[in-house]
Image (cartoon, rainbow, N blue to C red; front, side, top):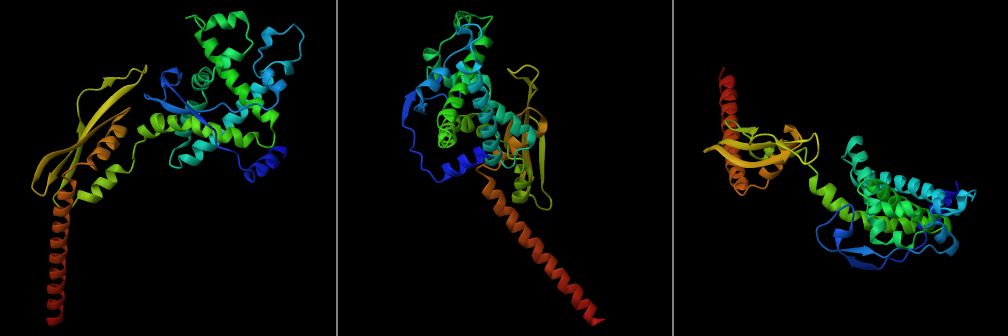
Length: 306
């Protein structure tokens, strides 16, 4: 109930936009972009004591120290809020995604690798108090996962620190901040790969008429993806009729033939000769309609005579 009151209060309070700074995306663990982009400034945790806790690992404290003196509980809060925010964001942004695709997209933007990339860019590890074994993990091939997880935990703890230190404005601050951080991921990792599942139907409506056909067939052998256990299928789409024979309209790739077919149809919708084919289809349809109308009138005339 308290959270609801906080969010209602936030909706009435204007939050100043974050300033931005340019960083090379190669520093980003998630590899979201291949060019420079604007990274919003790190929001400040307004309570210095909470900010200190958000960067303190339990392993650096004396035995018996309360958990509240380390970032573990703030990490729990930050992790929970980011999971909610990610789910809410992808659900609103992608209304046509099924639950599986929504879960994949949510995982992409809150996984340890992504959050670790943000932590590294903001140098949260430099201000953190960490045990020696974790610091050594940064340069260890065997413990690289431990380092990535620690960076992700630091980011989540920082989010939790903002929420804890500013219960009335914290949610809005995090929402605006994460919206800017996630936008490059959405643009380059999600939306660039979205398949138009209506492309085949749209193509057929545009160019199919009596005496024509659209064919989808393999466009080369199945290729092995860099992702283990994944294959890449290639499909081409061709058109026959209205003076064309096996006219190549497009090709696409995908994890299965269906997805590759959708991609091929999407490319076909951009084919430079599509408008020419559509014009011929319209002319054919008009002639067919005129013939049907004339036939209908002849039949009606015969019936009248009888």
